[in-house]
Length: 351
Image 1: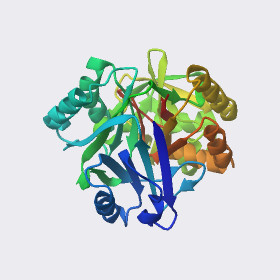
Image 2: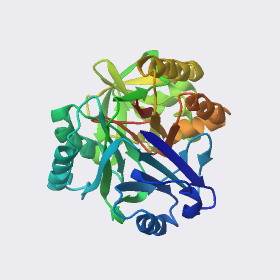
Image 3: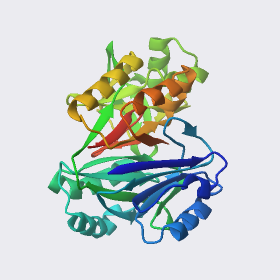
Image 4: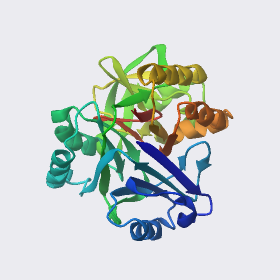
């Protein structure tokens, strides 16, 4: 298979797709103002080609912040694209679409991936999708776009998740998740006074969540929302840690980017040697994939902001490009199988 990446910093879709011939799946990453127009234009340029899209930044060796980018797969790929609607209410209502697409693609664990672009309510969406994918052990990688809109096959949807099933006909695929944080010693808590609907965490070990965070890290209230770049929380799930980013301060509570429940076990995390961790991820991928056709990744917005702050973003993209054809987009939350995580990188590698 082959992966194509094209972009236009000025938002010119014709420029972004220059050289793209016979795609078998297209992913569109546009800006808020031009999204609908780009979706319509893409469908006219490549009618009947499965496509999904969202509003957000994308990249290969450079980042497209406000223009338009296109990632496409060609040669040796079977693909299907569709949408589950009403994700804030009942995404399972549309589950037959996914069931039918899984049957049609006839993919298996080793050669098929699901990529999703979501408008929100991620945890419910992932549970719904996973109920179908788990029957064939098909992995999922994806993320949340901006402005509550996604596209599938030339149509724009609100309150929906667009997904693509991609089968590599000539090799294997595998999903990865990268965590650049580790637990701070002695900083484990039980959450309480939570508001699940609004992602609010009121107390940790019975004390104000905001005050606990400030006392441990010695930061002012106004700096909490940027300190989370280096010190998010981690929701412990067996041996796995799902990163939980802080969105804002609400009185003595903290509002997060993912749901926290009463009695959840949380740890305060701290930034590790991210350059070394990235190198280890690249080394692991190379070891498991001597021949790589493409890498598609989703990087969290907060990782992007952190890497920019540390003047590392360009070096990061250069390092990832050593794997071969690498491209992806910047999400507002990352998806890895049935898990919704923050401040992470998820990716899929195609042989």
